[in-house]
Length: 250
Ligand code: PGA
Image (tube, rainbow, N blue to C red):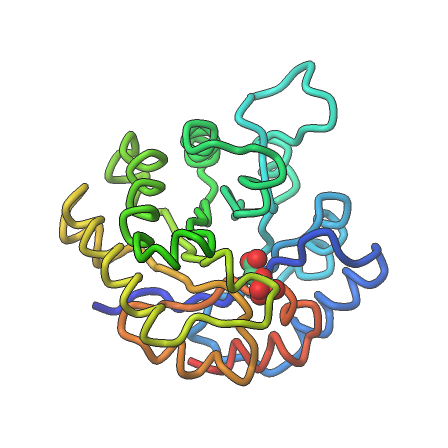
């Protein structure tokens, strides 16, 4: 199956306006593989300026979060229609930092996914286990339940738009990466589970990205795994050179 290849950056709460626009510009102007979809996960205040900088290029912009509500008295929140209205096409949903520090539950993430998809935007849905679960050896069941709880209500056309990012929490920002074998084992298990939940067509269509200390030095061997369709990259996406190198690692 020829799935999409995706290099997605997640800038998290980093950069100022000038740094954000410069980073997007340097990345846009760099030499990139043209069969790889590039997505930059930009902080809300800078999305509009970054989109303007990227206009006419093939680099996409993602929000890092969205509200589960449509509009109204929700101080500090950002709706999918706001995100859509500035021209962004992707939303990262359920990052482990949102789950852990902001108490986002599977049920909340299911609602956010619905809003995102109703608006015609593409969710990058994150899942992944904490260290103690990995140590106990129950990581596959743990991540399967995250998928079941957040995705079960989605229809086939919705699922065809979905991107999944498997990000073991113990590998995020720690410098410790899952081995290609660990990544491949989990991605394969998740793909088999998607087949069980939905269909073989859906399972073989959905891109599953790996995230957790992806860098130029390890991207190639991770992306070479059969079920790893790209990366969701934090720290190494904050430098144009290293994110370009990752984009060129397929
Ligand atoms: P990292 O972050 O690449 O800095 O480990 C990945 C992520 O949190 O998406």
